[in-house]
Length: 166
Image (cartoon, rainbow, N blue to C red; front, side):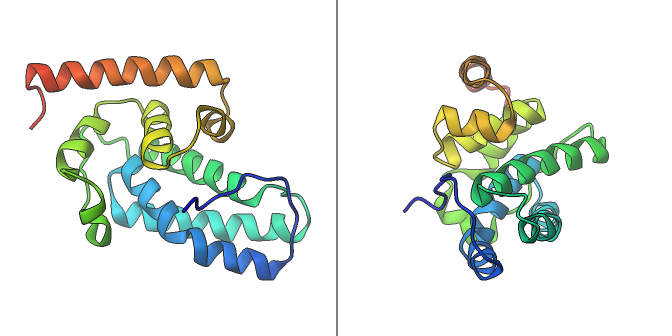
């Protein structure tokens, strides 16, 4: 099941409420993987929905799902920067533990990446988005997504091979 359509459309407030119900859990999981903290992720998603609603009502948002995704990613990156944490502490995924194999290892590996690159990897592989969708959400060219993810995967493989994680 694909949670987001990325189609150009404009609908009423009722559909905004349906989008909230449909995508809240998926956006929180995405945010948790980016930020490494379930509580921060829930706050980020709530904040994004609260900020987007007035823009949606004013007719300033055509692609609600894509816009929500992009706002969540941007807010996650901002939250990470605001924390200025030297060490990223992975949070628990509670309801999603069974969906993510060896979450602790994945979280530790993701923590080694820069926030924007981490967002790209999470969107591409955990969000099941295309490179084009990821590029649109993060606000970079598709080539940047391809090269950043390629370098990130190489780095992550190296960390696993050398036993630097765990």
